[in-house]
Each structure stands twice: as C-alpha cells, then as structure tokens.
Image (tube, rainbow over all chains, first blue to last red; front, top):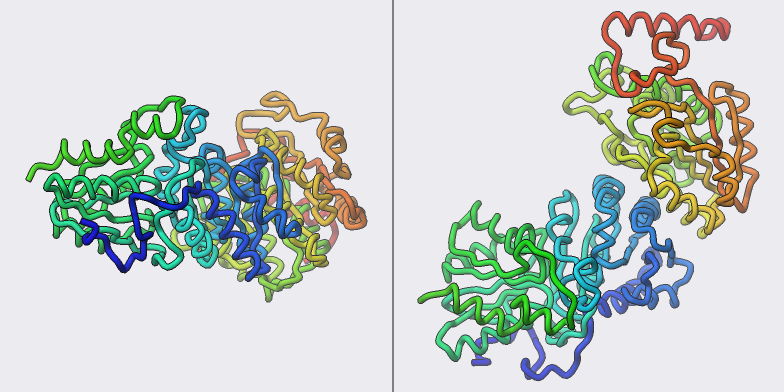
Length: 328
Length: 260
C-alpha cells in the first residue's frame, strides 16, 4: 500500500523504520543558526530556557545578537517588539505554557498590533511534555494565538520540518508563531520535502476519508492509514503544518472528494486545528468532520508514549477513532 | 479634542502637557517632516491613554495638521483612542494595556547600544502602571544591560482610576526602589520647564545606567475643577466644562507673558 504515499513529498524511504528520532525543537536551533549565518539582522531571545528550546545554539554562535531576559515572558515579548521595530527579525523562545501562556496581552498589543517581525517559538507543547504534568502541557496555545490578527501560525510535523518552518517564518514580514515538542519523534520528512507556508502537504492519497493532522500526529496518522488500508478504509493524510493562513482550497478539495474529514492534534479540540477546519467547512462546503484531540480536560503525568496512548493520539488511537466514526 | 471626542482621559493628558512640550520642543532630536529618519531619538509612550497630549504636541511640532486633532477617536481617524504604530507617522509603538512600553523602549535601546548608534530612547510612563509586574521585569533588564541610552520619565501624578496611588497600591519609596535596581534617578517638578530640560541633559550624560526622571505633576493642571480629582482620570469634559477649562488654561498661558 506504500503506493499511495505521495512520492512528490520526498519522505524517507522506509516510513515505518525511521533512521532518526529527534525532538522538533531541534529544528528551531538549527534553523536559527542557519538564518543567523546568512542574515545579520536576525536576533534570538530566551527566557531562561535557552538550552531546552535550543536557542542556546544561536546564543553561543552570535552572542551579540542573543538576549537573555530571565524568567520574564512579558518582558521577553516587549523587548522583542522594541528590537524588531528597529528593523531586526527577532525569535523569542520559551515553553508554550509560558509564551504565549503568560504573555498573550504583550503578544497581542506589543507584537501583533505593532505588526513587527517577532517570531514566537513555543517548545514543550502537547502532552508529550510527559512527566511534568498538566501545568506544563500547552494544549490551548493554537486557540489563543490564531485569533490574533496579523500572525502566522505553524505546527511542524518533525525536526526537519521545524528547521524549514523556522527559516521560512524568518523571511515573513510580520509576526509568526511556531509550536514544537520536547520528545524525540521520528524524522520522516527530508531536506527535499516541500514546505510552503499556507500550503498543505498531501502525504498520502486516499478515497474514503482525509485525515488532517499537525505536529507529531502527522506521522502517527500515516502509520494508522497504512493499517486502515489493509482493513478496507482508504485514508488520505494531509500535513497541516500551517494553521494560519489556513489552506481553504485544500480543505474544500478534500471535503468535496471524500465528504468525510478527520482532524488530529495534540491540543484541545476546542479552538485548535479541528476548529479551524470546521470554520472553513461551515463557510464553504459543509461535510462531516470528526475531531480528535484533548476534549476539554487537563491531562496527567506519565511518559510521552503512555500519554499519547491514554489520550488516543498515537497510531492505534487514531485508527480506533477513524473506525469508530467512519462507516462506508 | 476630548470634548469633541466625547470620551477619553483628561486629567493625565493635561498634567503631561509640560513634559511633552519639553520633549518635542527641546529634548528630542527629531524631524517632524521625516518621521522615519533613522537617527531620530525614539519616544515610547507606555500609558497610551494620555495620547491626546501626544497628538496635540505632535501637531504643534508639525507632524500633521492641527485641524486633524478634532478627529480624535472618530471613525476613520489616524488619531486612534489609544496610539497605533503604523496609522500615524511618528508614533513609535502601539499602546493601551499598561506596563508594556518600558520593555519596548529597552529593546530599542539595546539595539542602539550594541550597534553604537547615537540616538536615545525616551519612555513616558505613568505611576499607576507601576502596579504591573512587567514594569519591574523591564527595570531589571535595563539595569542588566546597562542601558545608559534609555531615559524614562514617570508622570508622578498620584492618581489612578480607583483612587490615589498610595491607597490603591502604595508605590513609595519610588526613587529608592529605582536606585536599588541600579538606575540613575532624578526627581523634578513636572511643570517646571527648566528642571525638566536640565534633568534630560543630566540623563544624557549618564552612560552606564538607565535614568528614571520622576516628574511630580498635578493631574488636570491649571483647570481648577480637575486638579487632583481622580474622577477626571478617564472622562472628557462637557460643553460648559470645556469652555471653563479652556478659559482657565488661557489665563494660565497668559501668566507666562505675551507669547503666541
């Protein structure tokens, strides 16, 4: 069934045996260093978690363009706005629960209303933060960020894509937001996999339904689709790396083609990817959409894989969800 | 302006008139005809609700026609109810939610310092917004990075929406607080032009530390029925109040001699 994988996406050869596992936050570190080498106007800031967010890689290489504010996310956003308003591109990095969790007002007014090129990297999002527990699991960030005007919202699927997303958002003129994870996950895209902000990647063709996923759930959706094919359900898998601006054309296309969509995300189902898709469907082409995510509750401590299993956000959970909701 | 707009913040705007006059007509190195000039000094207004005085001063300085002042807060205006960067040339930052401006000013100052630019960053802030934690984050930051090119001016008018600052959330001793955070502190009468200008000149000579000029002001200065009354923090004058206020301000102006 590997024949259904879209070859133009240049994914790794053997999808179910990835050679490398990396946390997607690594891509931020690599991406900012690459940008920093080619563009002297790129600055990076940290709020006391430089190594965890991989901002330290830039800091070690370009100390004159690195700024450490300490545990002060509101000041992080404000200082970044000031630096950016002098013509710099500024990346700020902290855990998702703190930025945009703590500093939403500053992101809204100092960054987005000013419309300055501050790029917000939120690491440690989703339940895969694991043992730290609910206080540290950012599950609401997409919802609170995507409603602010002027901002681009990205959720890369793996460490390679987060490297590309970092570079691409560095080139945009306005504010941008990127969500990454702490846990090592399969790297299944490659340097030649396309990445264009606002354009989905169709990773797998399918006829019965289309799964729209973002973050680590893209890989799990691909794995689930392979197994579902054997059970007679043909699933397309779409990588929704851009939540905003959302690819309405792709959503309409798949809504008309399969008439049954599934969204999967490591985020509250209220306000996240599924909601964003539902908004497009309601406006343009109503069809059935079943949303898989965290359903209005806080989560627990545990290992990342235990939690993905418990909250049904791994391969088996996605499979089970599709089978429970889709009837031919 | 405020009467025409039928809403807005009167007392703070009037109380800051002398400070803005000192800045735009003496202290700032700026060019109203070229508001994006790279080497201009930056003025960040943190407590954006006093923007009527900012707009009035900018119009007087030549940034835009004075007639436009009467469009304050009206649909389609460049003079938004709280300032918006991008709508009106010369506005350096959007503001409104309190406590954000000092961080923005510090970010600008850090760039200027690291890149050895000659321009300075001025930040006008209020006393009441020192209730916000973010201010103190920025205070520590500016001290850490030795932002000698950052000059903040606090409108110490002692009022905030719910009452007097020392009753709502005591701020004193403000000077000692700033000194202990590593700042250079100057206290002045915020209605004494010479003191204000001298303080800014002194601040410019301080290289390794940011400066806080605590400017003691009278909210609603020279309008007898507004002075020191917290109720005038967030409202605009009615018909008769406007006539009375302008008349008193005119009398005050004439007391400085025959100037036009």
